[in-house]
Length: 220
Length: 137
Image (cartoon, rainbow over all chains, first blue to last red):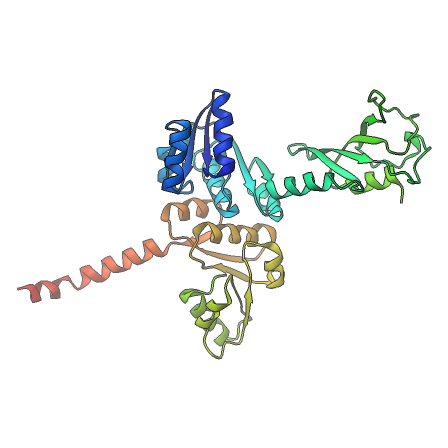
């Protein structure tokens, strides 16, 4: 697969390295001359100096035959504009943009960027998961369907302990897919499963209903 | 958005005509370019940030104009103004003519000072050519 990466910073460099190992053909566009030289030294001639928002540069990079376009610079406006150029000018089928300011995810989505990755949000969540009282952890976002897979911990004094799944006011469209309980083998809950303290529940939900799910599982 | 020479001047002109003007810039030192009796609001903040735009009153704005030095910043701010806040009139300065063309086709009304100025200089030059030739002779 031919992949173009915009931005040869830490993210761009390690991404290029990983994708090359997987055998993909790729090109990194980087504005800075010294950084370009560094990447060429380390990875071979896979990096050219240029502005990934310039149509002429993208043309030269062969954007027209790229199957995937990834913009991972530290500037959201640059990532947005280069992905839009790739999508609308060169018809690249899949565009992926790094979003530094989590607030920008909405506009990126609205402007047709296929996949957005909010580095700030990911770091925040990874740290939050380490806080023992943190109630809900996002494991995976399935952006196309607007679904997310989350893990919810049942605290020791939750009002829902002892209740069965069918007694819980689960929001429509939400599914409890797995219960992790102490040292037991994780199991798929059914409607008669009784909640216990310290259960870790993996569920499928949506961004709109995750709060209701949390309340349903942990009580108020 | 952007209180450079053009932004500052435009804000001043619009304020004189009694429009309700708010000007945004990342740096409050830029506001020195506003006329001394500027009757509008000057706000420090990033015009590609939704919360800053809300603070600037974008939800009730009739027009949004992006005049920073960065094409991409201007384009992004204009797309936010148009597609998130539904501002009726959005104008974008885009130096790069090719980028202007692309985003024009995506519905962002923009103009390229590069193209306009090159054209203007060319016309000026050709118009005064006979006189220049006379001098050379």
